[in-house]
Image (tube, rainbow, N blue to C red; front, side, top):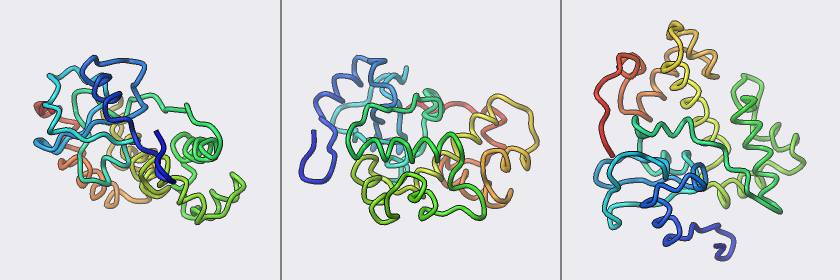
Length: 200
């Protein structure tokens, strides 16, 4: 549903998909649970939270910007990337793929301006499109993408922390530790030790 310039999620549709754990909606929205401060994929296996305690977000970055941390059970970093966009959304799709898959905002000489040039729009317009369609800026989407890459590397490899940080797109181990801890409310080493999973 679109109201004015802001893309709005259809609350009732999202709620039905969340309760049914509908795989077709995986990656199309994320659910933040106010009582736990955690956000999940629609297919999360934990018992669904009460409807009055949830908020829906068009992207993981939007959920994190609102203060929610990723669920350790359904692992939002493994959700499929949703490409069901048309019109100006195609520009966002292309730019987001460059951020998520190619690390377009990770290098020292990268910027939103450079990314915008690659997709054929101005930087301010690209930021407006991201806010409209994803509920987060390109920089926020890039931050989430880096943390998600790091989480996958922590789960799937035994790489040293410095190597995890660099491969995930962080410029330093210190920055990696700071940002990861902000998002997960735990350090990377705590996540790697497989601490007990908190349920959303």
